[in-house]
Length: 328
Image (cartoon, rainbow, N blue to C red; front, top):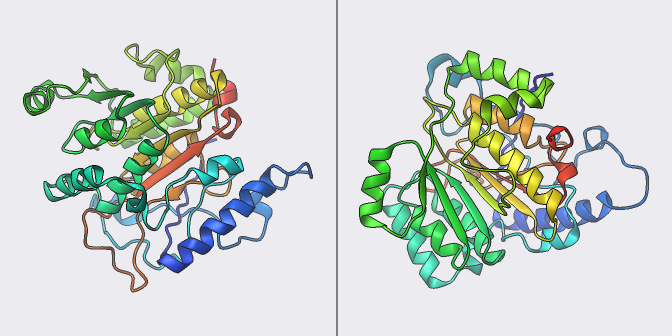
């Protein structure tokens, strides 16, 4: 079945966020109790449990126009679930991710945001803190932009690979940053009806995904501890990178769960990003996810850049990934 999308983004201030972190740890520990498991969707939601997800579809699907304040009246904070306590403790501070970053990374993030980066400054801080906190690892980024040097710097000592569709853009970026490792990828495109139909097929039979969405340039024998999906453009769609993120996270954790796998998906106010993330990475009342940018208490977004939602998934077991048991 095609997974229905409901999304919740919360209005969080610093005090509420600290409370949420405490409740997240309790939720995580309880999820590993030997007592019989309870479907989170049947439980009474706490401050750390969104009762469901409400995707923003209506106006965008009708007009193609994004309205930045669409979730300002939704007070429930979104959260990660089912993680082991040690995985929870290594997460960045959701309210102040900059607190764990060195000055060099703070300055690099500010340069990206000031040069026209599409994310808010808090998002750059949060992703960089996540990457840096795991130590040198394998980082896969679907997108090349002004933020590419930031991700590579945060992953100093590890492998950072970028996937890009445009050869012209890659060549232009390499003139300024010749040390970046950038592969060209021909993505599977299609309009919304085609993407929706393909998702129904993928969920019904994941073998369809392997045949139509697999990337030969990304063998599933490689381990990736962090994956960022911020491309390609909406006209092409991010369904293929989201599928690859799901598959690679699954295969990585099957081989070793020593480190959790983090998946970031940007622009999750759009139809494809919402529906494919829900189906292949998880929904709030199951595995859960964090939304890294939220409105202030007055309903306005911080004035530090884009307000398109950024989802953060963290997995420390392959069983947490919806279709992992069906991937060969």
